[in-house]
Amino acid sequence: MEEVLITGGAGFIGSHFARRLLRAEDVARVTVLDALTYAGSVENLGEAMLSPKLTFVHGNIGDAQLVDRLAREHTAIVHFAAESHVDRSFRDTGNFLSTNVLGTCTLLEAARKASIRRFVHVSTDEVYGPLVAGQAAETDPIRPSVPYAASKAASDLVALSYFQTFGVPVCVTRSSNNYGPRQHPEKIIPLFITRLLKGHVLTLHGNGQHVRNWLHVEDNCQGIELVLRAGTPGEVYNIGGGTDLTSRDLTGILLRMFGTDWDCVRYIPDRAANDLRYALDWSKAAALGYCPERGLEDGLAETADWYRNNPDRWAPLLRIPAHAPQPIYHPV
Ligand code: NAD
Image (tube, rainbow, N blue to C red):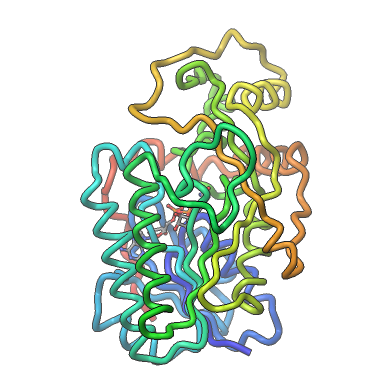
């Protein structure tokens, strides 16, 4: 079927997606383009790096010459590369805009010139902003609260404008919060798991009542693959269906899993902005055949096992300062 360029494929979700596509018999070739920021590592691709179908390119989505060439060599692009951590976006907004908006724009321009068959832009439920009640549908207005969400919302709009203006066959996916093995330990679930493994304190923002929908990364990848194969150009698809939980309830599950009590939990002042609740209506993706399969407790147990068994993968990350370059992997 496709020769697929995956940007950000050495990051958390992108590497799960690359491994998944490599298993598909009708996918002839996968190229991962990744700048290997603090958030990316070729180790996330593991044994997939040995696949004759995979090429890894160390490079930046903002490098127009490079992405022009890569776009010409592929039939589809699935775009994960981004700055993805909300807390960092408070102190490094320019970098978020540069990567998430301008980088996406450079990639779209390459897709336009190369007449790419399908461009899947991977986005987030955070673009809808906080919901008091109900679930966000794809037709709802976007009201991002924090710089990360604003940068993703801007990139969604640029991507959709490339469909309207130039006919680039763009689909946008907006998923809820992902979790699973190999996520960077700056995100709450791996942060809490690694702290529990080390016997450290867990810190909860504000009153711990922020509600998120927790989706296993493989379920998100299932949805993204369906959109790649069968999505309608110009359309947005919400990908949710995980479990809605307050951060306090999520913490309670992890404490039970580790046989620990609430003595190790401290409450700290809330983020500068912290949306109270996200929730997604994902019926449009369901109509494509999307059906999340992973239960939260099993998914969390599997995730905790990965961190327990791979301390060499996450312990060094706890010591790397923001934006320190990763060791260079030479492109093939
Ligand atoms: P991540 O931070 O784990 O990975 C991002 C990857 O992009 C890294 O490998 C990094 O090296 C790479 N990258 C960053 N800037 C780059 C650039 N300029 N050029 C090339 N590569 C670059 O992120 P993730 O959690 O895997 O998220 C992937 C995508 O999914 C992002 O677009 C994010 O906004 C979106 N998303 C994430 C979640 C979530 O819960 N993690 C939820 C919804 C949507």
